[in-house]
Amino acid sequence: MIFGQARRHELSRVLLLELQSRYNMFAGWKSRVALGLLFSSLAVAFENPIRAPAPDPSLVTADGIYYLTFTSYDRITIVRSDRLNGLIDGEQRTVWTDTNSTRNANMWAPELHRIDGTWYMFYSSCDSSLPCCDSCSTRVLRGCDDAGPFDCKFDHLADLVPPEGQRGGLDNNFAFSIDGTFLEVPEHGRYHVLSIRDNKFNQAIAITQLDTEKWTVGAWHVISIPDQPWERNITGAAAPPQDDLIGVNEAPHPLVHGDDLWLCYSGSNCGTPNYSLGLLHWNGGDPLLASSWDKTGPVFAQANGLYGTAHNSFFTSPDGTEIWNAFHATTRSTGSCGGDRFTSAHIVTFDENNVPHFGEPRPIGEVQVPPSGDKESTCRKGRL
Image 1 (cartoon, one colour):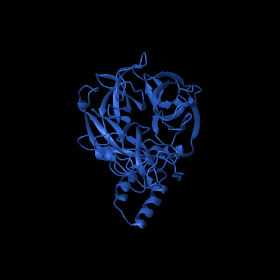
Image 2: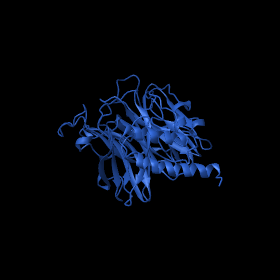
Image 3: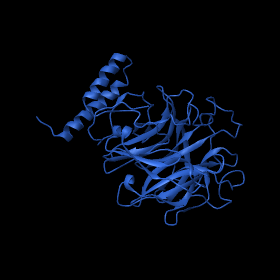
Image 4: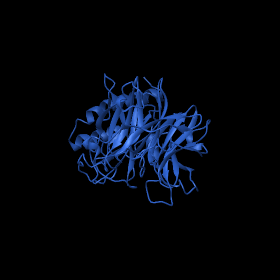
């Protein structure tokens, strides 16, 4: 019987998924090599990393195309490809530079979001005339309505900072903020979630109501502080709980599956191997209250030669049936906040109770099944 291309692709994918589940049970190198060759021969595989260097990734899919943006420091760029493994050398375009010296340094963690049909870019940046990083604030650019984000012209829309007295720090006047993201909670509204300094100067996760007509925000409300040992690594070892200056909660990003909503975030300093992911599960209360969020973690941490496996985003497979985790990591065993971080991707699965499972980072070069609906492609080595 002769199958069409789509049918052959799906059969190969089903076989690959079964083989991959068995693949992880094999410890012998001969078994790994044999299965790796079989994966490649089926021509529906990819390898991590998917882009290098590429810290703080935001990856989205739209109309069968992958769009990836990440920290480029003095500009914001987008890479696109119709295959996940095509991002390694995909077409790249600079979509934003800035001549305003109050906001054109340390452009960190850009995130793509499509809101009411329009593409927006949330990001943070600092004053180039001042030392890093107290001047950093979260901002948003507006793109276009009728094209993919790669082809948009982006313009500065707003600085997402509330009035004095409603901010962070010891006196609620400290405007420092990074890693802003967009969150919509059913029957509650729209929110901006970010990392700020709390009243003990820890880096904490905060949330504020977001008006997407006026593009203004309300007071920052802290919903997570680094109160767990795994969130308090500064030199690779857990810091004493009484040290209030080194705990880190940053890089929030929403995860939605079924009726459940989480905020994923990164704990500890990015310059340690222990930089890891945690989850805040919304329990149905007022999103502005810390009591409405239940913390678990770490849910994803260093393994298999990858360190600092955090600052992530979630994207759907091209056919919309799967959720994937795009995260950065480094091969430096001491961790890194620098340009040696790369982007990798792994599928997220959910159990019968709708609890997400991230697995563990797979080794560089290990052949994996691509997202469902990914264009048929052969595996190519990721470059570091």
